[in-house]
Image (cartoon, rainbow, N blue to C red; front, side):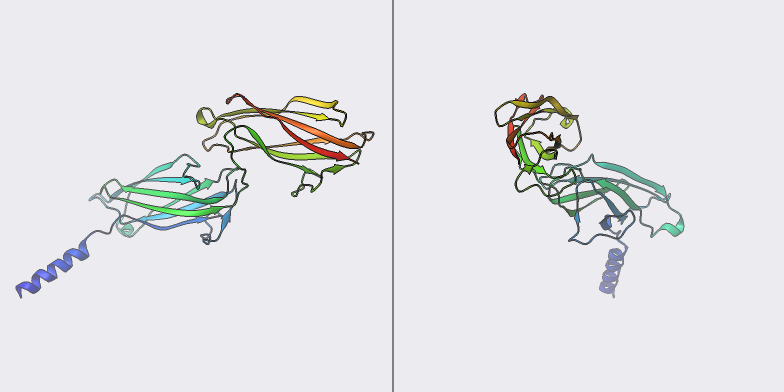
Length: 276
């Protein structure tokens, strides 16, 4: 009888033990208050994702108070943070009928507009300030971005000619006729950053005729001065030229000269097109 009482008391003690602090139902969606996306879902750069989770197993004070602190962090495939940590507190007083209530946390997260492809992660850390207990959870999601090969020094990548401004596919052969409008797009990378991921770039453009004569030159065709929490791994650029109706047939050269004023670097890129 005595032994049975001890076992029974132990069972009561185990059942009465408080539940551990838990992050419940962590999910991400592509719509505000929408359903969780499947594991195969792919986000794109510049898109918002919507995070939600509940918190359970927290301590309630004799005054029916709870206080929970949490931090949400997001990182790219290399572990680089894509946004400043989101930190907040759930500090409230419960009524008697709220004893099984679980706070729901919702936040929206912007995927950087120039994010590369890969598996990204969101890390949730929660602390019960009354009990001193903690819990953490990580959610992974995929981004399909536009990848530009990195470089240690200033360089132009992916210079392509297009028939029109909105064309997605570049011309297989850059051939135009007099009176056409030439369109081109390219990426600049390999520049250096200052504090707060600041960049300071500009580039010049010139067009050289088959004879070697410069037909057009613009010393500063465009510039990019900006800073951001997440570093811009490349800067996209574009240009267009209205080809004169009397331009002579032949092979012409576009000379693109980007300048990195922070890294004190200059680069020259050449691309040719043909007038028929």
